[in-house]
Length: 239
Length: 306
Image 1 (spheres, rainbow over the protein chains, first blue to last red):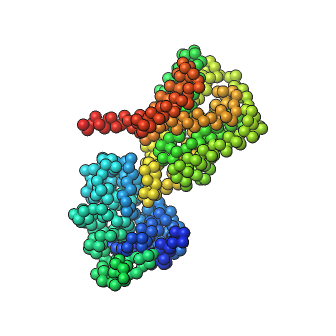
Image 2 (cartoon, each protein chain N blue to C red):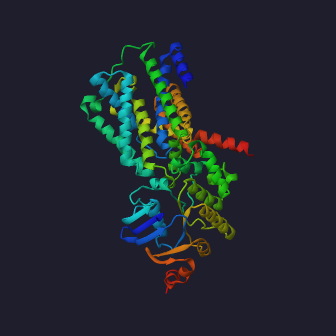
Image 3 (cartoon, each protein chain N blue to C red):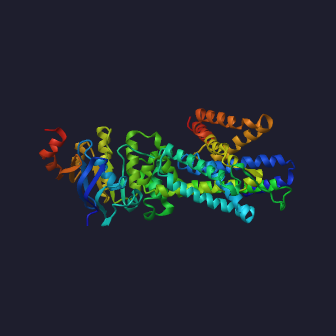
């Protein structure tokens, strides 16, 4: 059974069709790359998957269950976690407290209630942010914010992590650092959908890539094939 | 908390100047309102301009039930709490999908609506107002105002216990997450609408309870005083001055602002109240936007890490 199945998904904003009949499936533990030019609908697609937006047409099925009508918080509880294009920490809280929110809510039924703080520390250790545990989250650097976003998504104990441009604005070595973290998480059985503009990172990371252009899926396959696809080249570079 | 209650009781047995009880009642009423306001305004970040609406609804629930069934005061308080809790739920369902300034305007509109209803309701005296007789039995107290003072002191303690419990509980953490970033909170599994409704109901119920004894305190009540602007302004100003981040911020703000208002009423002029609130609010927002609690925390952090 696939972990996630999106069938015929359509979403419009007024007269603008942002997504048009998207089909997508993802197996447990798979690494999927989602690419496309700006405005092609990538973020809208993951908003529809995570429940931040509701789609107009089509269905979203997670672990065999139709979640099309479920609000975002219920999807988070089922095991869909996401990071944001621009990190969105809970600014009034410390790094550790940031992680306690998903542990107390999304993962509440899956964690030992007396071990919330320990669980949060373990995740920070894993991500490499444990020395910042007591710092206020508004005092972090860009890469630390990215790591916090990932750590917080991880604290939701998900089966699927959707990473929305977790590497935007980072330097070369920092990109590798985030990539290593995502690989490591995937190695622990987490399926990952990665949205990214940094091609080097997507190609290295993904087992399969889906390309969106103007709300439609124009290509799908292993990274090398997709990169050679003339349709993809046209979408990015024009005629 | 029990110690405060006992101290209050001893105060009623010891002190003989009734003015102290009048003044303390007003300060404590402000405290309950401020602590209640902070449950939605401070914890969740939804600014409610309609506090006077909840307070006034509590006042009028009390008047109606007193006139119709002559219920004892504790029952009136419970009834007002229930009515205003439901009012909080209704307001929440209608308005909590709105964000920021829109929510604030909606709450203001609801307060004005309720005042209009009270002004046109003959049974409770309409716009002309109505007299309410104080009961003649004082139990162990020397006068009815002492009894009312103890009632309001108990309500203050109840409000503080509720606020403290909420802020340290899972619900409080969820509300902080909503205040910081509602979308991120929702994506981390926080049922945002449900938590906002819980805090709106709690806020409404506490404000209604604060309003219930008011008719017996003033003995003459009309819509303008029940839905007074000063009540709404104080309910916002006190948490802002004390600090909205912690449950005890509004307590500090209420005691400070309330005392200054009462002292100035006696020593200078009773019309000075609003001006004092305004000046203090402007002062604190420019100099210490996080309130007294925020200022204290900042100084403490500075001291710890030179």
